[in-house]
Image 1 (cartoon, rainbow, N blue to C red):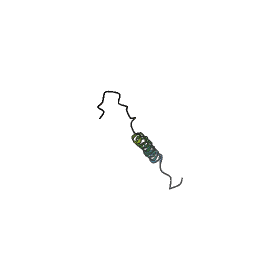
Image 2 (image 1 turned 90 degrees about the vertical axis):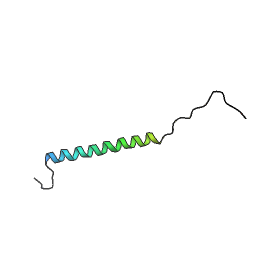
Image 3 (image 1 turned 180 degrees about the vertical axis):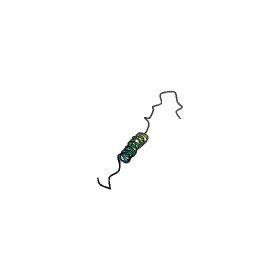
Image 4 (image 1 turned 30 degrees about the vertical axis):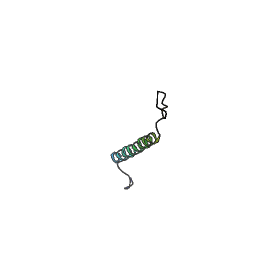
Length: 51
């Protein structure tokens, strides 16, 4: 067996850590895209003063 290979437990920990990092990046990307959009403008239809 090669000396450079991680033991089974180490491989699972590395895979889980990589998955968490990727998941966090996806969530951050979705959040930043959603925050970048402006809310829809509303048209006022009530009474107003006209000078």
